Length: 296
Image (cartoon, rainbow, N blue to C red; front, top):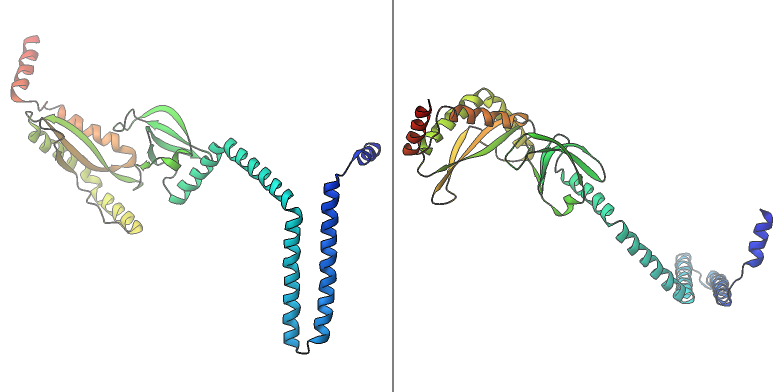
């Protein structure tokens, strides 16, 4: 091992340019030390005032230090420029090679700082929707809910989302109010159908199945609103109208529910209302009844 070290030292060669730079650096440093010593000696001998002497000593030392740094920069300027270019090239290559990882870490910091969601929340990012079951510095794992944006059943599939998505995409948190939520679903009708009766039936069913939880949900929404500084929402069930075009009517049903029972409440209301009647236009309903009777 010692022999290998001696051979390396023997074969090691230093270029003339490097020797010149080292000699210039040593000469500059020695010169500055000598000047500092001479300046300090003259100031201590010639300046009588203690305060003025201290001031001149500090200023001379700082001035010579600045000249030393300037001289070193002039001596090693070309080498420093080459080194800086190399460092920049390496940094650019590193950033390009790890771009996705850097974006994932940035997305993780962004969602943590913004408190976008937490474990157990139901979120939607682009076309991905589900319940958050795990998250770390690089990825967020969700159990898919769907298919589509209006279905609230788990599909049994797990989705691993890179945190880079949270840098450029909006996050929808369906569990923003935690234990209880205001659940909205749409029931479409044609203008010729008996949508008025359906509206009354949907409202009656919603009140029936949500009334036992209303006081608890009101207290919860009041607590959340106070914490976030928001206006307290009205949690009473309601059915409103929407006209997407001249031929259609959409009944917008909004009901308060536990976050884990949105699909259950929705199906309970729809089953109770539409098992009793189709709410089609009168002629169509009579034709359907006639067909059923004839088959019987």
